[in-house]
Amino acid sequence: MSGRLRIVLQVAAVSVVALLLALLGWQVFHKDKEPDLGGAAPNFTLPHLGSDQELDLASLRGKAVVLNFWASWCGPCKDEAPLLESAWKRYKDQGVVVLGVDAQDFDVDAQRFVERAGITYPVVRDKHGSTLGHYGVTGFPETWFIDARGKLVGEHVSGPLTEEDLERNIKIALGEPA
Amino acid sequence: MTRQLLAALVVALAVVAPAAASEEHPTLPELERELICPTCHESLAASTSPVAERMRVFIRARIAAGDTKSEIKSKLVDQFGESVLAAPPKSGFNLLAWILPLAGIVLAAGVIGALAYRWSRGRKADDEALGPSANGRFSLDPELERRLDEELARYDA
Image (cartoon, rainbow over all chains, first blue to last red; front, top):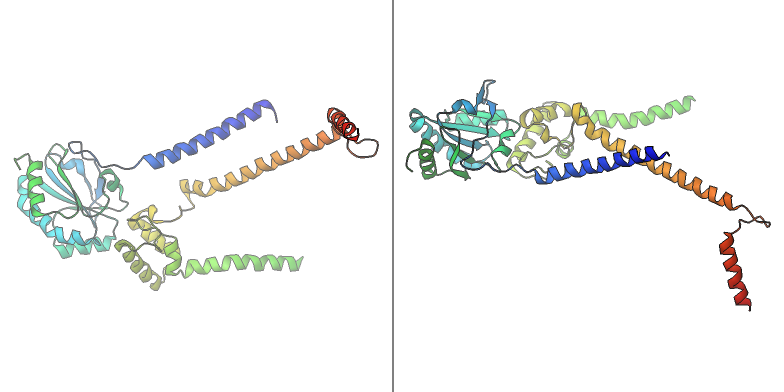
């Protein structure tokens, strides 16, 4: 084997090992982390549940958004759905949008859930769970609050909401004293 | 020749027939091993999460409806994305995940083979360079032979 060929092979071998190590490091350290409160809400475009029509989160700029992640098989999600529906009816005329994001679910189950819970607020379907990582969602339900400028405000509620959680954080998102 | 062809045909059938049967008439345990729970990221066979239970119900219903394994997997991918598959599909970019390990094994075998060949040829060349002595045996390195003679002479003395 000539000297030059040997050097080329050695460089190639070292490059492959370095690439594999870089991939391993990226996989270990590149974890989706929760976004910072006060920072911009990660944007997404997802189809409405049961429809091909898409909703772009950025299109809701100028409104306060209650962003609720849920799935039909999640027990606490059933419990908090009436609270969210009630808040939607109470605050929608004041510039508040309750937006449900259904993920890790079957379409048919999600639609049945919406019908049974009498949900009338918009629900989008995240089939591949692409938003979960961006919002640091590790379970259901989880809720974020977004103000009119598109910033994450108030508290990130992991687990079922209480009425007090909703009232307090909606007021913060509206820029009113809590 | 005919006998050999027949044997090859039997072996081919023995390999292909169970795979075809599994594709046409899949079972729940088979699919459980080939799918991942989307919430806990464990094998569906090991997962007890609510969504895993729901997936099992779905799979049983699809098997009863006569769906093939590919159809059931495709419907689950449509609902949960490709991450629900335990092994990446053998198409597109994912094909690399199947090809690269095999290519790596073949490359490593080639390199090891080449090194072994070079090593064995090098040893043979060394042996030939020393050459056989008068009694037909290979002689030692002259310096080593001299030292050995000295040691033996000292021992005899």
